[in-house]
Each structure stands twice: as C-alpha cells, then as structure tokens.
Image (tube, rainbow, N blue to C red):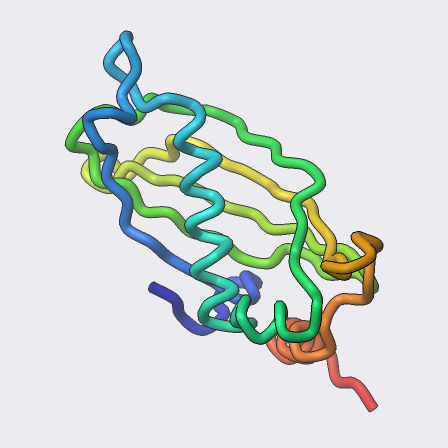
Length: 148
C-alpha cells in the first residue's frame, strides 16, 4: 500500500485499483466521478499509514479538501488494472497539497493526474488550524529539512 519517500515524493502511497461494473458509464469507460473516489481512497490510505484519522479526531482536528483538479489523459476500461500513486507535494502552516497519478498497468499509460488542496480544521469551530506537528515533522524529514 505505502512505501518510503522516493523521487521527491513525501508520504508516497500506492493502491492497486480496478473498475467495478457499476463504475463504467454508458460509453464503456470509467466514470469521471470514480477518479474523485479513488483520490479519497489514496488520501485515506496515506492518513492511515502516516497520520491516523482516529487520532486526529481525538484532537478535534480533521483534514478538509478545498479544491480538486483532475486532468483526464486516457480512458480506463472495465478489467484495466490501475496503479494509483499519491504523495504530499507541499505543506504549509495550515494547508497541504496532494498530487496523484493513475496509470493503466497493462499499457503503462497515464490515465489521469490530479491535485488536491486542503487544510486542517477544528471539528467544533470549523475554523482552520495549524497542520499537525507530527505531519510537519514527517514531511520535513522526507524532504530533508532539518528543524531546530
């Protein structure tokens, strides 16, 4: 599912994905909506590995998506095996940016590239909060930033 950072891709996370029959639209290709679901699957896998959501919620903190952008490059069809890869591209004081690619394994062809921008919010106030220290430290370690 996940691996250590490589090629400048902190918090690198992988999932193998396959379209379900109900995810294929009338033209015989994967519905665009499924890419958004797969992004969520990748993001949750990343959180599970590096910053478990239950622990965050105990601190009344949750991640929130502010924007999702997807570039569709090649259609995914039923029975295609897709490698989904996501990593944390950047991390600010209160915001984060995740990048992802979906590659059709049998053809080694990029099907889509995506970015998600988000922040962390307090569950009670719904106001932005600082990125959790544990995530900041992990990100800095994987990109080679040394802090005091």
